[in-house]
Length: 39
Image (cartoon, rainbow, N blue to C red; front, side, top):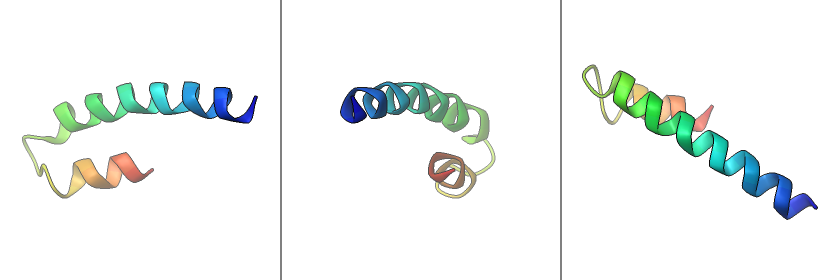
């Protein structure tokens, strides 16, 4: 159950990460985007 729940969270956060990258890619690909990914 732990692995399943973590997989779901990873999938959701992955989509959020893509949105964050697209959102902040214009400002700083390796700065702001990375910070958003780690949150």
